[in-house]
Amino acid sequence: MKKEKQASTTRKTMPAAKKETAAARPRAEEAARYEPRIIAFVCKWCSEAQETNGSKGRAAGLPAVRFVSVMCSGRVQPSLVLKAFELGADGVIVCGCGPGKCHYYFGNERQAEMFETSKKLVSLLGLEADRLRLEWIPGADAGALAAVLDEFTEKVRRAGPSPLRK
Image: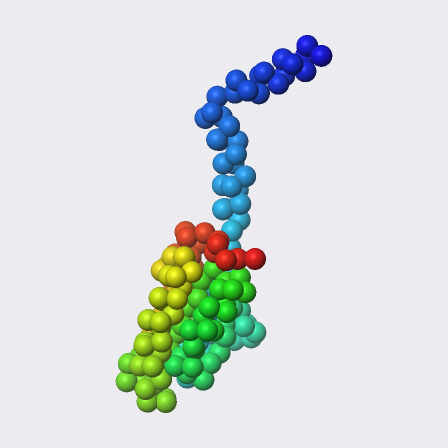
């Protein structure tokens, strides 16, 4: 009985700094293993050609990125962005043709307008602005999409898991 009493008093007198360190250790290990889930809505005409061959919806070298091919970035409604976050995405990026280069003439201009709505809705949900991005990718620049996705993945990784993640 006395030994049990001594053990319990020993735990109570443990310095606060040691308690915090012990509690923080699992979180640090979890953060090191954390791989964000990224949904990339990509325009069929400019960005899709830059996806790696045979990736079947995933980028080689970027296992966290899932591609969703759309005929035009202008077809990505705010509801699709919100649904991606609802289903567990940590970040969403919309990639389309540059201004004046849209195959549907004004699809990218429409996306720019809808993206503002998406940003406002994501903000209302309490998510950081770094979790959502709109990018114009030139179709001729083969490495542009990969570079943008690398940068975006790192930003989302620093932000941590989405609070909406299931």
